[in-house]
Amino acid sequence: MNSMSEAVHFTPDDERMLLDAIDNWVEKSVRPIAREYDHADKYPVELVEEMKSLGLFGATISPHYGGLGLPASTYAKIVIKVSSVWMAPTGIFNSHLIMAVAIERFGTEAQKQKYLPRMATGELRGGIGLTEPDCGTDLQAIRTVAKKDGDHYLINGNKIWITNSGNGGMILLLVKTDPTAQPRHKGMSLFIAEKGPGFIVSNKMKKLGYKSIDSCELAFQDYRVHEDCLLGGLEGKGFQQVAGGLELGRINVAARGAGIAEGSLKLALRYAQERKTFGKPICEHQAIQLKLGEMASQVEASKLLVDHAARAYDRGERCDMEAGMAKYFASEAGVFCSQEAMRIFGGASYSVEYEIERFYRDAMLMCIGEGTNEMQRIIIAKQLVARNPA
Ligand SMILES: Cc1cc2nc3c(=O)[nH]c(=O)nc-3n(C[C@H](O)[C@H](O)[C@H](O)COP(=O)(O)OP(=O)(O)OC[C@H]3O[C@@H](n4cnc5c(N)ncnc54)[C@H](O)[C@@H]3O)c2cc1C
Image (cartoon, rainbow, N blue to C red; front, side):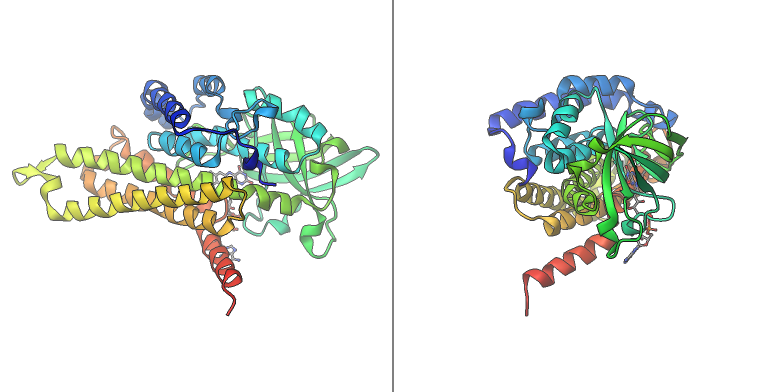
């Protein structure tokens, strides 16, 4: 069952009120600190507390476990709004909610009862630990191994780029429980891994963009985890469980791309009306108009694709192709619009006094995370063929 099928009934008025509240919060709390925190690569502790009050850590968790139970379509609009001002803070609740979706979809009832209510309040925050130094796209090549030891498992291995793993308290950890299994995915399992002895945050990574949020290298050295923490209580299901959670992850990333595209357009539109050359605002030069026209079209198309994928997800339909298309198109739109905005800003784009350079630095990540855009097009093509046999 699709986790979103348990979403509470949400009227357009409810959605408008919620989005207004998010707008107010973004203007009051996010916009004023974005530039300073991004440049200082400082974790926004105050924003995390406000996200808790807004219920963002439980946004897509069902009310039965203390969350808001928002449909993905409403949630995506929240992500677009925040990302149109500053993308990075969305990662604090996005990766956390991908973990929550996996627990709600695949976890045992005991696991749901134990983790989801504390995740919904933000008391316990997490992310997903898949990538390793030697593999990201080819996840079946991971080397982190969990060995049975009585009613526990002993885990050894390394992860890299794990969002929220510095400030969060746990991750959903992908391991091999049978490194010799063929096909390889049959030997993969997911653990709900809370921090404890042997769970080592070895390095907070320095990044081009997506600053202020922690992306860390992790080492697991004889990390002991109880068998009750094996997601769903079954070995060998990890790969499918990851794939199941990635649809929402892709919609999230698509929404971030659409937000970056929209934010870049807004900044450029304003600057193009203020900046004058040859006696008139640059928005009256045709070369700039062509850019603005293309950017605005890509923003609207991105938002429609995100909404289309999110609604399919909310109906409980298979939507890997729709989510892939949204993720691919909207993330490329984010890169395109931030680059075009840089050109519209001219030399000013290179000054850290303006905001546009942050959008430019943040945009490219959306083409890489949650499955690279190369892989998205391959997934789209495979689905096209499967859905349209000759
Ligand atoms: C800031 C940041 C945050 C991140 N957060 C997380 C996180 O929270 N959790 C997590 O687990 N991971 C996270 N990641 C990792 C991210 O998911 C991976 O970087 C991504 O999946 C790509 O893997 P890779 O870097 O190993 O690239 P590779 O897999 O080495 O790919 C390199 C290139 O080869 C291409 N390629 C690979 N295989 C194929 C193929 N079969 N056909 C065509 N092209 C192919 C790719 O598209 C890419 O262009 C994060 C990364 C970054 C940069």
